[in-house]
Length: 219
Ligand SMILES: Nc1ncnc2c1ncn2[C@@H]1O[C@H](COP(=O)(O)OP(=O)(O)OP(=O)(O)O)[C@@H](O)[C@H]1O
Image (tube, helix red, strand yellow):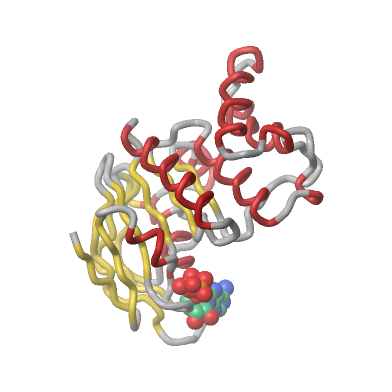
């Protein structure tokens, strides 16, 4: 589904922060990406989402070599990937409901068709009462849950989440993890970058550990 071969990354003239990464994200798989702060988790998530190009090596996403993909083709490919960024990236002029519904609107679905699904997901993540609020008045944890709901609503082929439980308390983190696992059961490959040990201990999933620029995988 996604394949990295000998991928290296450096920013500008700096040192290589990721070295010789070779791994695959298989269909329907579930994995945690972990490692100390600054190890390169966010950079790796950005490469998986094709928003950052490697400085060397090969990345294939849905069997396409990303170095050969034109900018005009990227949105279409990215539609199959749900992503939760650390800074949420919600649109401030749209309500929580509208933010979550946006990916469905973009693909031309009718509101009458998806409204109930969006409301149900918002309730599941505990935002039932906040669906008409604009992002600037949401708390950090609420924004995070809105970003998660937006990433899940299309049931993407791959879900990438960067510290998705960083702003919520342990019971809510557990609930969100359940949501990721449900999505995984429905067929989505899930990659969760986290250094939340409690979260890691709750699932016996594959672990991808970054340290000193290298990736070690524990299946
Ligand atoms: N745009 C950038 N320009 C230059 N250096 C960068 C840039 N983004 C990240 N870095 C550097 O690359 C390294 C990896 O950063 P990254 O954010 O990927 O790590 P991380 O594992 O996600 O960290 P954290 O857990 O603290 O979020 C760090 O040394 C960081 O300073």
